[in-house]
Image 1 (cartoon, rainbow, N blue to C red):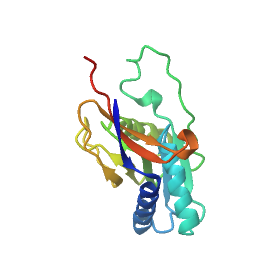
Image 2: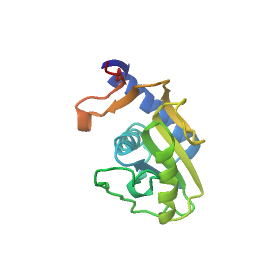
Image 3: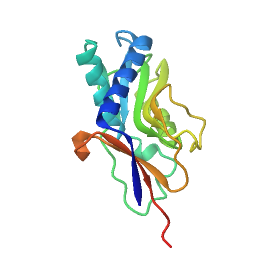
Image 4: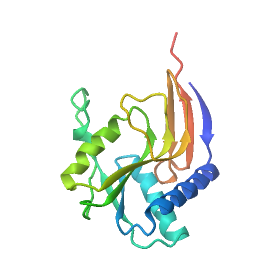
Length: 183
């Protein structure tokens, strides 16, 4: 197994500032917009984006929620192991709001399709956008594209993209891992 560093902590910080600025250009003061981190890994990115918007750009009171998609996935019954859902925490109205889904890696698009279904339980948003740190653009199973992305990565065959956050992995980094087949 080999790994290649795609993004360092400094590069991630620069990307987060750029993504925050792009959101401000589109959503202004966020009075009609909400952020929704997709459980589990999108929540770390969502908290970071919210922190940048509030501390660095003085946008007050941004609504941030967490959405679990475990039982909305089209493959949830295929697992041999019992599923463990994460917490959903949306304590605000999404009806007629601009919703920004946030996830770390966009791969096949199936997680986002699940999130589109799950959010309907909380109301009918005016619009839904997608922000991702990494877009694995040649791996899509569904026609889903991010509105905002940090970096496009062409990962093929046995390659995986691993996003680490200081909060849970001790460092901010993104690695491309090549799981070479055993002979």
